[in-house]
Length: 123
Image (cartoon, rainbow, N blue to C red):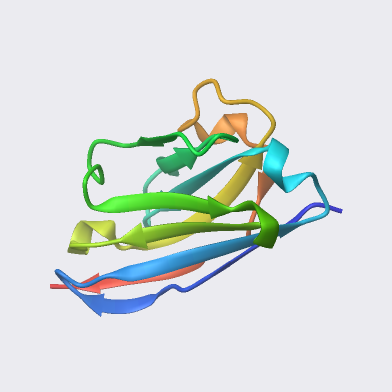
């Protein structure tokens, strides 16, 4: 059974940093592309960052240069380092896994999801 569990969310002041983690089990972790997504109240879920099986990354423009995704395959763990946080980054953050890489920031391409972790950035 595929399982993804996020951790590391919390509340922070604008300009601060957080690091999210996502640990996976029940699938061949190193063979899957991984993504971070977020959903704010009343908004659609959007892709934030994605990382392929080789460590190549892709980011949505609004976080490029501030957020950095990485993966530790021996630990089956995905990370999202978030720096220079802004109030508009406030959302529930989800990790997800997919066997492909096309349209890596599109939520519909990911069949496996975690339960999410809340990130709140105060102004």
